[in-house]
Amino acid sequence: MSRRTLKILIVNAFVAALYAALTIYLYFLSYGQIQVRVAEALTILPFFSGYYIIGITLGCFIANIFSMMKLDMIFGTLATFIGACLTYFIGKSNIKFKKYIAPLPPVISNAVIIGIELKMVQHTPFLINAVWVALGEIISCFCLGIPLLSFLKKSKALNKIITFK
Image (cartoon, rainbow, N blue to C red; front, top):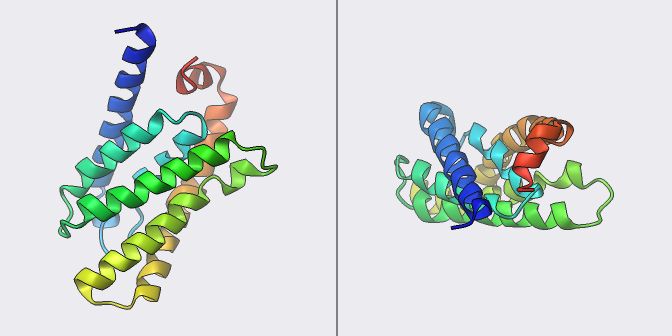
């Protein structure tokens, strides 16, 4: 196994553990119709490298094992995976203000997918579910994710680590 492969595995294990730990520790904020899943701020990481998609998705799956809605293991993980993938594509694009729109995919994917899941499980209106989930995702992905992105871009030492160079 090369050093680069080992580094990718270690960093993804750390990201998965961090995502799961934040979500489980902040359980009261992390699940349900009204949620602010702080760990979703990490969905900004694929902006730097697609390798983070693995760690974020795995961390989300592990965290969703603890959800009262077992469908979260499938749908919640899928929503985070889609959001992380689209964030990666924004990071690689030539869009002028990509830093400010990079958090948008997780907001949209979670609002739609979790909104549908909550409608199926709790029989609550989709639009209300989607709005509440989107608001929580905006707090996590924009209010926490953009400052995280800015911090990681400014730190030369961290930037070298997070871009796998």
